[in-house]
Amino acid sequence: MNFEAGSIYHVFTRGNNQQLVFFTKANYLFFLRKIRKEIYPIADIFAYCLMPNHFHLMMLAKELPNELKHPLARKIGTVLSSYTRAINVQENRSGSLFQQKAKAIVISSIDDYDDKTDYLTTCFHYIHQNPIKARLVRKMENWDFSSFKDYAGLRDGSLINALLAKKFLEVDWENFYEESYNAIDENVIKSIT
Image (cartoon, rainbow, N blue to C red; front, top):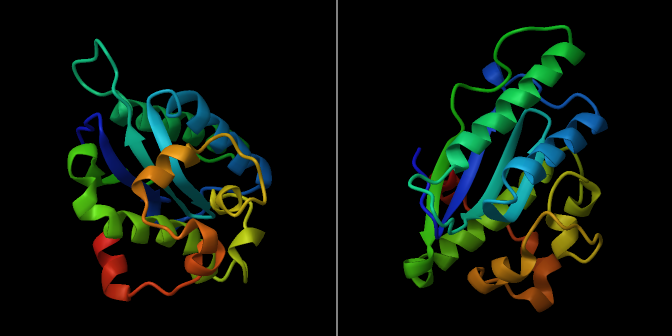
């Protein structure tokens, strides 16, 4: 996929054959460090959720002077391949850990975000609701590997750009917690994934 500066993307992929990709807490933290090193400098991260067998990222590709082609696709590949190498060593395995290519859906762009804020906000909530839908936790704040805690004021994480995300998202921030638990129509979820 070609990424364009100024566009917001929902990036996600699953483990190959839906296998686990995160085995320990240290694996989740290692993956987040990889995101910080490779993706954080070139994209503003609005939301993330790491699940046992997949992950979701919502991000805005930054303007990068002197770049003919945005490096986000290459950097996502770097994160996935370097993480795969580490897990293959840890788990004494070989081969692909993730599905062939990460999916990236363009959610919006700076020029037209007013027309797509509803879709953007729904995707934002969907990403955070993943641990509940998978029955890993009963409350989103009990899942440590998502940006929900940062928005709920339960953690002061520095990976997300909450100020910029709030500019684009039509969320009732005064009632963020309650709004986050609203059910999302299954048909809408299909269009997000």
